Length: 507
Image (cartoon, rainbow, N blue to C red; front, side):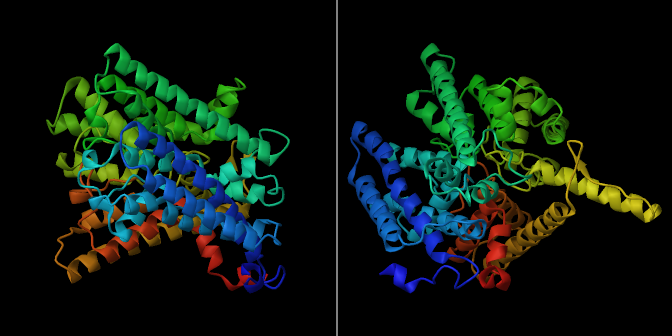
């Protein structure tokens, strides 16, 4: 029995059996998700069996893990780190099964299939596909659906539906909705998770309805129900996968502006968004420090790109405004959709986009990267240090929304940013060294762009990995490095770093 080989509760500082048990439960329910693309395959006269076999393997594996550890039921805060790390490693393994079983030529190799699945579930949007439109529609829809599932977070869904997550539910939700301490929307953390998912589903359905309406009315002839659903999934997840080789450029301007609106909404802290849209509490965002800086970053990035487009005579008029705003919003929120091939823009415009990759959306959103709140508090930490350097006797508390932020939380922010920049640099260096070892020519800027795009869960980078390009030219080793960066970026590094400490295992 699996339970007999796992450490007993209390034998280590963490109950491994409980963590594995929960991973099994999540995988068991994930098996049902394959039925959605299976229905698409039926309607499109495409092979259904890859999805059905994937459902059986995933559900069966989850059930085996759950029953093999059924004696372990307690999930505490310490187990939360291990659960999150294991789930986000396991999800792409099973999510890649349809790609491999369907014998899709572009995803036939396991390393490529795992990369694509990791990119999907982490809502990154990087792809190894070189011809997206040549892939079966059912596989494309599964690809889009993985982003939607991973956007709000499988863990948040688990907290919402699994009743035994009473003790560790807050820790799991905190890990998924990284940033400040999670605020309750109700009396229980489980109900909070449910309400977040209800809001997520409602926004997705609204996007599907609006996109479909554009197709029916002729406002966007390229849009239909399939395209509307596929792009609503990746838009609300801030994922960036598209069913078109030209990404969002394949659709009309009205669709692109609507995508901007939903990307901005999805980049707001969902806890705040719930209070505004459901409870009508506008002050939840109007007085929120992070929200104001979030909008300022979006406007500033859009203006910079617009000036660079106009100054370089790259485009003009309404197209310049739309492309500048769209790319600023898409890159900063870490969606990665594209309305133009920005690799053809000026070097200054590309540098601006690279910097936007490090901003990220709000904490508690479906976006990735560093997050706006960390930039805000890091700025205030620096300001405090400068003031105390001049006036050593004064006490200058760091505040967020008028409340004093605990020094422990501030140290965590500094540690995260240092680790983030370090991993970014190491990832870029690794790509350059691996390219020199092989025959692939990778410029330093392209390597840094790929590392930033994957670690920040942005998706497209620069050069051949640009918005209309592919990560396929990278070697297997580089593909593995980029896959690891996506995983670390989705987990926000700290949960993985904690697992590498002796104190975590010793208790």
